[in-house]
Image (cartoon, rainbow, N blue to C red; front, side, top):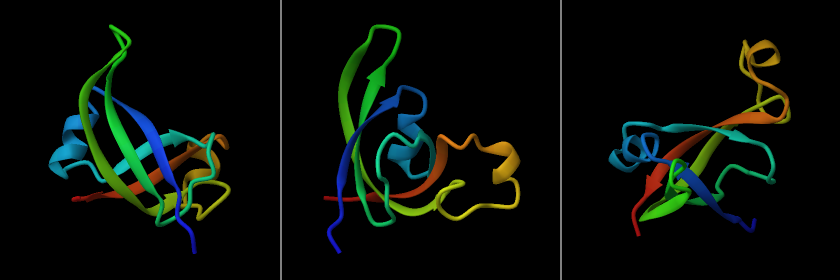
Length: 93
């Protein structure tokens, strides 16, 4: 199976915990065809100045919770149909 790579913005404040490995999930708009096993290149982004910081990291999608994938007990009520929670793990190059 061919896996995709997605290049994504990761806002300052959310990026650092992912980089450390403390944050293992990411709430995302389902504007892409995310699949388990896909790689995401997260690029740290400062929304106030609308610029990338230059830092980045790779993560792999390990699980997807959404109304289109595997629902959790609360997802029909708590997650908007256009969003998903991506479970992620750092990938060290």
